[in-house]
Image (cartoon, rainbow, N blue to C red; front, side, top):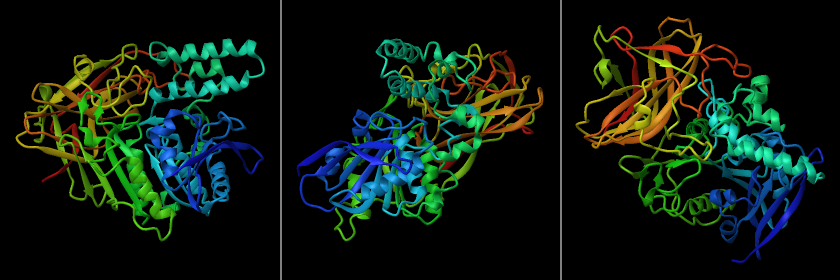
Amino acid sequence: MDVTVEYDVPATMRDGTVLRANIYRPASGGPYPVLLARLPYGKNFALVSAMMDPLRLARGGFIVVIQDTRGRFASDGEWEPWTYEADDGYDTVRWAAALPDTNGRVGMIGGSYFGNTQWMAALSKPPELHAIAPQITFSEPNDGLFARGGAIELGITLPWSLMQGMDTVMKRHADDPATLGPALGALIHDTDRTAPSGYWELPSGRHPAFQRHGIPDLGFERALNDPEWSAACRVAGRQAEVDLPSLNIGGWYDIFCQGTLDNYTESRAAGRPATLIMGPWTHMNRTGQIGDVNFGMAASADLLGFRGTLTDVQTTWFRKWLTPGAAPSGPELPPVLLFVMGKNEWREEQEWPLARAVDTDVFLHPDGGLAFDAPGPDGGIETYVHDPADPVPTVGGATLMSSEYRSGPLDQAPVEARPDVLVYTSEPLAEDLEVTGRVRAFVHAATDAPSTDWVVRLCDVDSQGVSLNVVDGITRVKTTPGEFAEHVVDLWSTSYVFRAGHRLRVHVTSSNFPRWDRNLSTGASPDSGTDFHPARQEIAHDAARPSRIVLPVVRP
């Protein structure tokens, strides 16, 4: 089927602001349903094709509309991340449904920021919106976007904000070429220096780079000053308001892994026709090679275990909801399609979380042991020093950071060699152990600082001794110095089989930098703190204070 493309087609919002879109149409016939994507990255950006293939979708019988959000690239208005997406989404859906040759039904597609623009539009309830397919997007902005466990998601906040600032700076100086070059050059310099210097600047919660260039941040700083504003992008607690089918697509090593799961879970709980696909993927990589692990060709979004490409699957799914009476064009998806890592296979499920998963305690023991048996009365205490001047580096994980930092499962040897990381390892497993669901840790700990962070990581150690990260989490707490307390660390979710002969391993430490900003051990607010000092940390593991990790174990 031939396709025609119109560029920079204007749509006027309720306040008179004009947003512009590219429209891909089947060259003849109709009427056709509409697939709409609204994003701030530039509608011609390669990321669009990575998330969705507009030409292929148009050849499949859809009118595809890709719009620059307010203040971005060809669209007018001021750039404020998240602020206008509900109202502009509503207005754009209504406009798109009235385009020539449509059947009046709109679906929304895309991921990350333009996964959230789908939820915001759906929450505003335009009557022509009939389905959404958000990929790799969050639910609660303070749990994976702005912050996690009270710590700033510095790893994404700094490079994302600087990169989005390029368009802002170019527009600001568009009429004065003499100032454009120096302003853009300064911003590019800071962007290039994110890893060696930018991440280290303080205060982390009012980052000097954003002040230098006059650009908005991802949202943490604004939310710190105006907590109510976070509602502009919050999905959590509101999924039941969206009376639409949703196809939720995520990755186990995606920075928004838990948000995808939560959006699905809450939609299903509200009786909505939600579907979930979880691959072994990171935010930017949906192949079979993730980090140091080759999960196999079938793991990729191009195969999905030989179900077809992800675009094929979405096309079939959208046709069901946007073309009433159309014959099925492909197999029906199960409610849940999971990639089980370790076994490296796709598995169909009827629910998430799995009712058959049993929460199972695995206890920290003295001298680096990890076992299903609880420690005795003389388990003891281990200590280390958290030094904000020398934090534990980020090595892999569910991250989205500057390009120097790889995501996914990576060899943890550099982390485990540090004196400020406590390492606990089990005996080799006698049989396969499947962990599918949400992982949490309960750490009995004390510090001599008024505030500190507790970071816990679960790893898989193979028969050669290579330790690969599976999930991790952080919690930032205010403390009474020297007083032990039990702290809960949410490691989010996974589906992972630890093979027979492998060993479980748990890290306990107080930093994962620059993924999360450093706790300065002073109790100062992140928007003002610049002084820091080391803190002495204590971890208890005895019968009275049983530090442990809780694994959702699925038996064969």
